[in-house]
Every structure is written in structure tokens, then in C-alpha cells.
Image: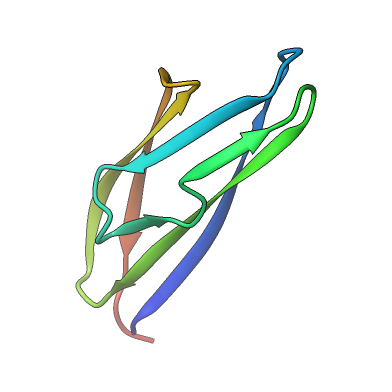
Amino acid sequence: MIIFYKKRVTIPNEDGTPATYKIFSSNPQGVEIITPDLVVGPGEKGKIGLLFKKHNVQEEKMFNIYIFKNKEPLEKIMLTTKYVTGG
């Protein structure tokens, strides 16, 4: 079975000024960042869209999502995905 999966991650901006976020994937062929550039107003929340690409091999894979805020490293999210085959 070949499937893909979308996921959204919320990022709050608790600062009193707008913030610019830049998001990168360690493996863009496996996880695409739908919203790689994001501007979030003061006190607002932004959403990062992730798209896990189609995969037809049963295995576990690890991906890192890197988030930069105003050009400074903010966070690294480590994701482990388990791909299954069959129906």
C-alpha cells in the first residue's frame, strides 16, 4: 500500500513583534515542508505543514525538522515514522 500523510505543527509567537520562521527538512524527498517560510504576528500562532511522501517499502525512517526564528536556530524536531505495506 502506498500512502502519504499530512501533518500540521503549531508555532506560537509570544514576542511583541512579528517573527519570520524558516523551516527545513533533513530529507525533503521523504518529508516536504509545505510552508517553509512563515511570518507570524505578535501573540499569534502559525502552522507548519508537513507532507510525508509516498513510500512503498516497509521500514522505519527518522527525519529532522529544523526551525529558525529570525535567522537564529530555534528548535529541532526529531520524527520517527514507520512505513507499513499490505492492506
